[in-house]
Structure formats: C-alpha cells, structure tokens
Image (cartoon, rainbow, N blue to C red; front, side):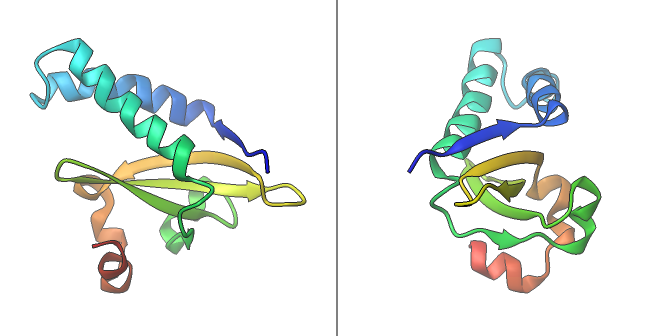
Length: 118
C-alpha cells in the first residue's frame, strides 16, 4: 500500500522556525545539530504515521482541522504531538496540520491520554 504524507504550510513554517528556536533557547549550540533534530522528527513522522495507533485529538485541537487524530514522537525528554487528518478511499493520505510538544501543550491531554503515551 502506498502512503502519501503532506505537511501543511503552517507546519512546514513551524519546523523551519523550530531550528532557530532550539538554538536561541539553548537546546543546541550548533545549527547542524538543530537541523538534525528537526529532521529526525520529520523522518519519524513520515515512517510511522501510517503504522502507529492514531488517537482522536482532544477537542482543543479541532481549531486546526476537523476529525483530527494524533500520534506521538519521543525525542530526548520531549514528547512531540503530531496532529493530522486522514483522507482517501483506503485512508492512505495524511495531512499533518499541527505539531506541538509536552512542554507547550501537555496540559491539554487528560491523564487517560498521557498514561497511554508513557
């Protein structure tokens, strides 16, 4: 089965800005390391979005699209939440609409969701 994954324009911009944010915040001191970190997140999304169990997104995230789902990606001590919609006759077309992490949006997830992730 062929899977198509698209990143919305806002997500693409966010990921580009994340490289600089990680450096400015002191998480990385070198541009190359920050780029590598962000690329690893993107690679994990692309390689696992279709095979990870998708969870319905909490209501708060419906502002980014209807019928949203999410998966998680762990990097170091950060859990990244990847929100997307699924399309196509065989549910093989994914549009990534929003990305955030536990440091920013963790409070939007109930204990039920968090215990599933950990």
